[in-house]
Image (cartoon, rainbow, N blue to C red; front, side, top):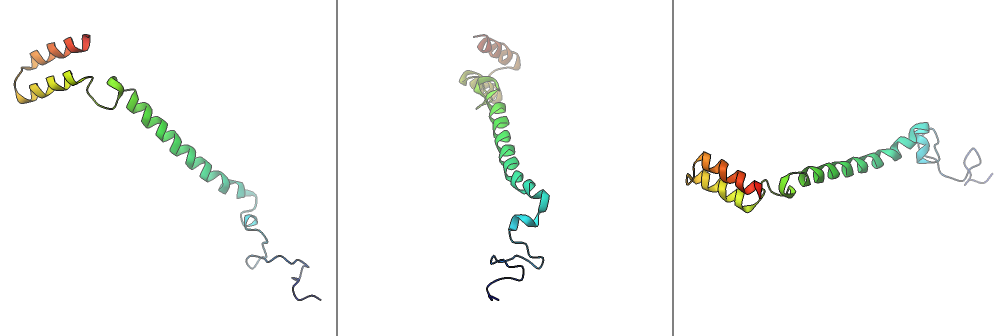
Length: 99
């Protein structure tokens, strides 16, 4: 008998005490799940990026800033410094948004 042959006549090495020849046999019928997990993780990350972009771009003014324009930002800064009253802020804000 050839010493290179295993007891079952195979020349391939075995894994583990049970004699699994291929690593995918270790999971049996559920091995396909381990191939789907990375796919689902990639899809989950892609979906999160799409939702994030949608939320950013769906805001007024393009979504990259919370101000519609530099004029609105300046009005709010003037109000914060106390240069204009709340009523004047509302009137001017409505006028800027109407443009």
